[in-house]
Amino acid sequence: MADEYISFDCATCHKAVANKIGYYSWIPCGEEDLFESPAVILVDCPICGNPSLLRAVRIDEYGTKEWTDVVREWPAPARCLTADEMPENIKKDVQDSIKSYNANIYSACVVLCGRALERICVAKTSEKTIYSGLKKLRENGIIDQRLYEWANALREQRNIGAHAGEEDVKKEDARDVLDFLIAICEYIFVLSKKFEDFKVRKASKAITPAIAPPAPPAPPAPQ
Image 1 (cartoon, rainbow, N blue to C red):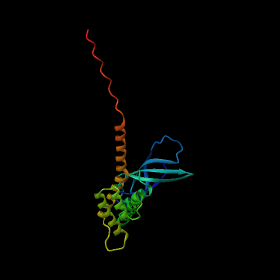
Image 2: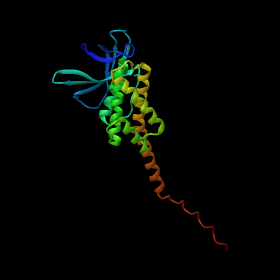
Image 3: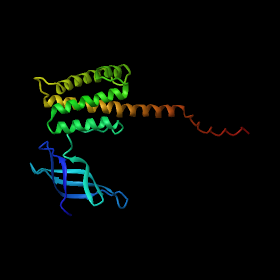
Image 4: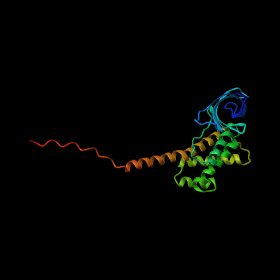
C-alpha cells in the first residue's frame, strides 16, 4: 500500500490533524469499479501518538484519490447526532457546532447552535426569529414547556457568543447548549416521527376486522 494521508479530529488533542494511514480495510459493497470506496482506517495522531479508528470514503476518479466523509468511530465522538431525517442545512450546522466544540472554539459552537435552532424555527413555524419561533413551537405542541425553557437558555448563550462583551462562553456552557440542541433535534425530527408512526400502526390494527374462530361442532342428536 502506497503512503496515504488522511485528516481527522484527534479525541485526545481536540485538534484537526493529518497523518499517514497505518492500515485500512475495504468495506464490501458488492459492486465493481466503484468511484467511491468505503473503508475502515487505523491511524495515529502525529501530536500525541494515540490511535484512532476511522470510517471514511475514498474518491478514486481520473487518477486522483481523496478521502472524504471521515467519521471517527473510536474513541467515540464526544457528541453525536442520529436525526438522519432532518433537513441538510440544519444537520450541517449541528455537525459544525460539534466540530467547533471538539476544537475548543466554544463561542463558535454556541453561535452555530443558535443558527441551527433558528433554522428549526423557520422550518417548523415560518417565524423569522428564534424568540417568536420558540413560542410558536410551544403553542403548536411541537415542544413542551421544559424544552421551551431550555431553548430560551440556549438563545441567551448564543447571544453571549455572537456579540462583543466582557463575558466569554465557558466550556461547560457550550457543552450544555450542544447537548440541548442535539436533544431538541432528536425530539422533533426522530421521536415525534416515531410516535406518529406508532399511532398509525395502532390505528390500522384497530380497524382490521377480527376473524372469529370456527364454531365447535354441534353435539350429536339423542337417539
